[in-house]
Image (cartoon, rainbow, N blue to C red):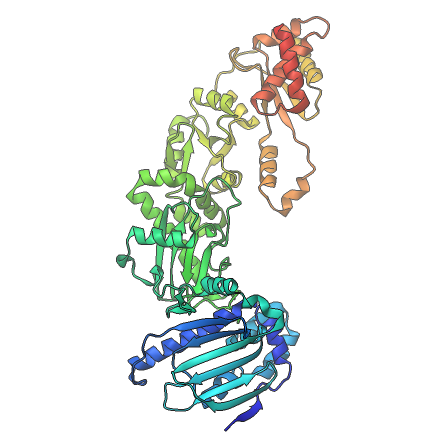
Length: 608
């Protein structure tokens, strides 16, 4: 007997809302329907194990078929099926109850609240109506009852009648709407199935071809796997990527359920690394690659998969809903990463040092972003000096304290951001017994500030900064100036006239005759300010955006060139002064454009 009725939702507005708002991406319908088929197969497996389903279950599978001529997509499973009464219960009553309240709240709440409200209702099947003008269900239960045929055209009206169906299971037939013709393309469907269903636990077929692995390696125990298993899986996920450095296999079932594998890729010295490389699954169903709430921001450069049924999602399963469980998972991942790095450092320090150029960036980022990670990482975070030696932070403090004993109560660490470009300053510092660190990655301007904050009685000075130069001068016996006060004034005026640049603050200092005739340094505060602005130092730094650059120009009174500048008649020392100043600019990489051209011409004239 054919039965007709109205779907129990108490409103005519539910289908337009579902079609427009339920999922941001209409391709999700296929994931939902295939997932329902997988659920039906797994439920039958469970009932068979409990002895509640008799007979052979056979080879359980979900099959997707496309019929372009008929304009249909059919999703079939041979799971437990439904009786007519179960169709009424599970299909006709959307979410069983509360639909009226859902519609009212959906109208009134903001977008975030709507996602949370929708997430309380079981609406996955109805995603079919986003792409179909009509949906049919042919289903036969594993129980000894007649098969049922259900039809709905996207309104609240439906029909349900007995039918003939030889095999147990359910066929969902979508009659594709005119505005959804893209889903009648075979390549399009295959791509969707590969994206969302490639690791489902029940075989998924597209026509006669199986598209999924039912037992991906993250569902296995680490003891069952070899390094080749991990690297092969990585290549399957990222076919064109270099081999990973190492990986972490996550497997925890309390206080939350989380499995997965996180891979550490080779990361060069850049901050614009590609994110969205970690894939999030829920019971082997692909959800999203947007995992910023689950994974700490500084670990977003990692690759791999995470699988957890405990992560709360909205109904579309496209957006995470942050709660205490997500925070616990986030903290757990941070701890596991720190533990893995600490183990690598302890077990093979040489190997760890070899990997440091690839992992140092995100370790420093993590130390900046998370105090707990800093506390864990400070024992294995490395710094490298210009002699290419690696140290932990404590080791380096001990190393430099030995060299600076008695020089100052506060330990001063010198560093370079460009060992080649700042070579003269590095050489001058090392010649005077100072060690110089290489801090030349894009994140290091912030890392310098963190170290000063965290390391007791320690300051860091860039080797070419004005404060570093003054520190070195102060701690060695500087020779007395050979110039009189009047000569010093004339020398300063000659250079100021030759330079003619208000951003260059000229002073005359007493250096050794072998030192450079002119040295250009930058005030430490100004240099750090500019560096942090380039790095995105925060809105509070923007108020300084209009501040001009300023530099310290130190003229060595004891260099022979000083006497030549003073001895030149009628201002003739200015070309020499300008030449010496331009040489200092050239040494700093600051001589460019027209000034560089002028310098080259002047040099040729002087040689002539």
